[in-house]
Length: 392
Ligand SMILES: *Cc1c(COP(=O)(O)O)cnc(C)c1O
Image (cartoon, rainbow, N blue to C red; front, side, top):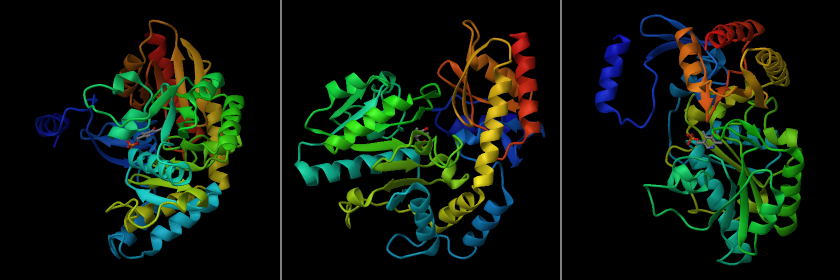
């Protein structure tokens, strides 16, 4: 099938919930995706932060295919090896104690909200269930995570929404002090707001929030769905903030391309989530967990150091491009702000025509390249961006 026929069939039968490019991808290897006409694209999107090892990494393919041919699913009524092995590795890497597996970032955040409320209500009574989240955050598309998402634009059309969510501006500690009361159970935040424009939170602010929460036993929930699994240069972005939250959520990069979400928490919180308190038919699926374990195995200190080095040269290069006013974010989670009048969406489209896939976030261009990118890939992307920006 060619792009036109693939697109026409999809448009006829798939909901039109996405603003899509007229590109149909058929295969990928490493940093490069190929479309139905054989045109190649250097991919600086990773499928929105998912393909952290690039397309079809041999170790990931081997792990997934071996597990698919051995035992593909069992339900959570039985034990399997990959699920426990992945949970053990996640606890080791995060310093947390126990994991619940679901299938997406939104589901992971739903699990985190449930676990936080359960702990708080069990410990302090049924009214202590209020959640605070940050303005401009993004936490997912289910009803509770849409509500948690601190952007007014998401709070229409699908109500009634769950109650007892409040929003505080990022970076404003006094606003948190004013909003938190005796019925507040948790604060949920992203350390780098991804969909909100690739904006990193201030370290002193985060430290103040953490100390405030600790003092009052308000649980601190960090949504690392996008920032986690090496994206910002360390396994968790929390490490760079010297932060030890009660709950961390992971998804995107963890599965290396297969759907997974993980809620990782302290024993204190986990002890309240007993039999029947939560569940998922597919959660902890052995094929998905085997793929995620392969990702974890590849994510060595050397690969993380490489990702940090590539992030540095990419960021340095971006600052020299025409019309660029700021380069934001952390590690390989990159936001690019332009002078007024330059549309990030138009730059994105022009890059695509030149064979470079990039993303946008609000008014910014956004790059989430696979962690395996090389200096050559950085140079090539910078050259295409320069060509595009010289013409806008
Ligand atoms: C993408 C994202 C989500 C939602 O993840 P899904 O897998 O699409 O449900 C939640 N939080 C953050 C920070 C994200 O970037």
